[in-house]
Length: 165
Image 1 (cartoon, helix red, strand yellow):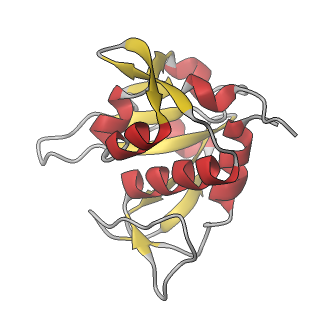
Image 2 (cartoon, one colour; image 1 turned 180 degrees about the horizontal axis):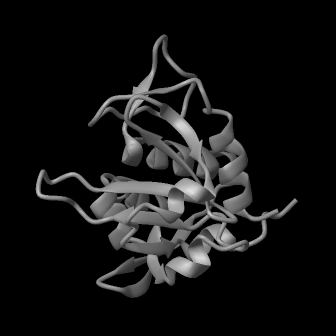
């Protein structure tokens, strides 16, 4: 199993349990009563949970599009907000991220005039895991994703390595 697969499994534990609130963040621990989180907050939560369950000392992230090794605590500190999350990912074609093997990639919408962007986690086959609007944490179908305006996709290469058993 890869860290990406573990991250997806941990993410699915939040389905239907967390509402949406712009700017809201949650830690990796047990959920409070009536939890709420925004899209980037949920991505941070599941990455942090995966790294607690399957630790890494160093993560291959990106700076200015160039792959770079950074300590896990530095990566997590910077993995805040969809724009910063996108900056830390190596860009991959949208067709790959939304395709059958895209599970574990992140999908991004650049900030709109109101300053808000969006981030989701690809589950492969066009489906995404995300926190959005009145729905909260949910899975969005491939049919709905085909109509959306994803701007780019990226992945954190360290999440695609095998987990030592």
